[in-house]
Length: 304
Image (cartoon, one colour):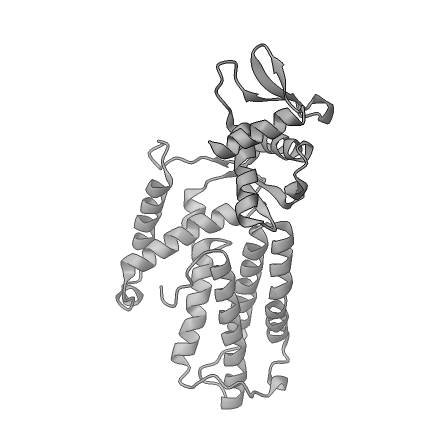
């Protein structure tokens, strides 16, 4: 196409490519990047040639501040070669390009032992979540759309397992752990959010922003308030490192801290001022946890 032809012209004009056994190559061995073949001896181009043209076209069209290539770590060399070639071509914007690599998932098979696609995994997780939800018929009957809720929990299970560790690390896909409502899993985060929503529904009064802050002086309350306040720092860290696991780690920390607080800091049945202070604290927890889930691409559930 036109962008690829223009890329080839720049490569030739700047004497970056040379012929080798009828093929056109770029020798990057001095940069410890081996040789990049841009055109085979039969005249056909390769991925790197198309990627060079595409990068040039995208910059001309969008004048981007940053362009991320989200590609598995097996392509590390390819992306290094691409960026080096763009640099040799004089593309000053190449430092705005970044490779966001990730590891591989091991054990991606059904319980029957056959390899599956993502749709199959999501269908199976949805079915499994239905089974878990039906174990409590009373709560199940109160859910307006159990099919949709099971779908969201299933998606949360898959996504949180995928984003729990640093993206470059390979990990083992674990069906049983993924479905658990205990431990650091997607269902656990959704349960924590739904539990906070339940507190607001059942308290019997509205949120009062004008509380007596001195009523939140116990260690569980102070720990929870401190954790809520840390959220902006975790978001900044995630943006800087481009690591979703940073937000997952925070969401888990907040959920665990909420769980500890709920063991002793009840709302229902307490003196009104105390109840209002605690409700505001749990409301802030729910808003913050919901924001973290949405940042991860998940829909926070109010009932489950």
